[in-house]
Amino acid sequence: MTDIPRTPHATPPEFVLCFDRDYTVDVNPPRDRQAVPLQWVKYFAHSPDTQHIDVWATGNQHLVSEAGIPGIRTAKALWDTVNIPDVEETFDKPHDENGEEISTYKPDRREGLRMIKDIYDPVEGVAPSFVVVDDANLIALESEGWSYYQPWDFVAAIGDNTAEVTVPESHGFCNQPVISNNCTCNTAFEKSFFDPRKFRANRSEI
Ligand SMILES: [Mg+2]
Ligand SMILES: [Zn+2]
Image (tube, rainbow, N blue to C red; front, side):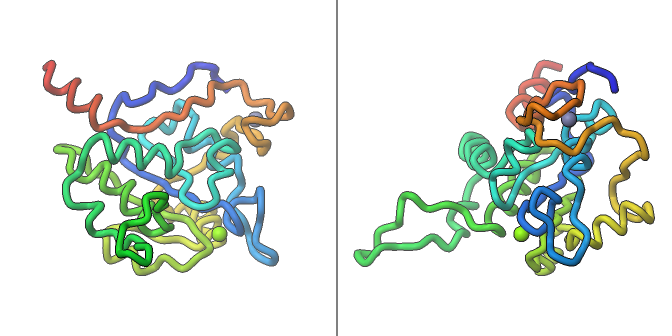
């Protein structure tokens, strides 16, 4: 394991992986089926060999601290900042009895995923593949450009080398949460993700 941290924002990713947590990752595995090992999520997010991959927590947000990855809060903030027009209007927000929008509104699962995709989509020259792994059935998102896996199918696809991404036999990441004292990984767990603002700024300097 190298201790060179991956550089945040350096290049746009080729793949954007979104992971649910409960009944998806093995910190809270499904009862009778295979879960995605936490160490794989850590590998995708933090290895110097996976700088072409962005990883987001799109289910239970405990995965944010367990895997050291960005989640819905980061996505929402970034999305608000890049000010993508007309996306928020497409969300079906709850209203109170007076017809006012409820301001504590929190994006639901699919909206969170759409928001993440929208962060990348309008940026010229950026066209990653989007993958979501979730025990909840999100197959409907495939018509919006996502690849959807149930967790056990993702595990099988990694095993068969048929997934969009691969996991080497020895990747050097342990299966402990990154916030745990038992984590023995010798790496920097920066929440590294593509930032379209920095990308645009870098390009305009050229
Ligand atoms: Mg779940
Ligand atoms: Zn570790």
